[in-house]
Image 1 (cartoon, rainbow, N blue to C red):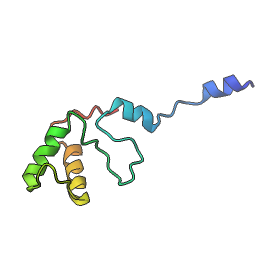
Image 2 (image 1 turned 180 degrees about the vertical axis):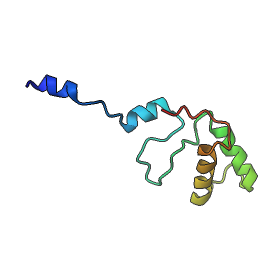
Image 3 (image 1 turned 60 degrees about the vertical axis):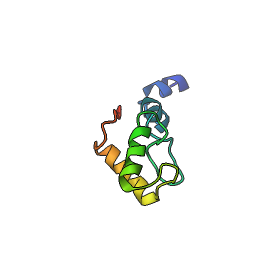
Amino acid sequence: MREDDAMRKKPYKPTWRDFYEANTIYTKPPHRYGYLININHPEVAPYYRAYQKEIGNPQFFPISDAERFEFEHLVLCGHYPIKLNRA
């Protein structure tokens, strides 16, 4: 069996790059702090600013890790109407 034939028979396994390119609101893994959502994405940023206002943080002040994970949880659970483009 030739090497070309062996490579053709392996099923394609998607990588995180495929997922990232199809879903631009996500950060590229692995993120050193464990964040999943890119808060600078144009679809996410307005909701992030609204969340900061909701919790009483000034816009120029970063939120804590716990607040960031809560925001990401709200986004992923559908609290904010962001199109996630799931693969």
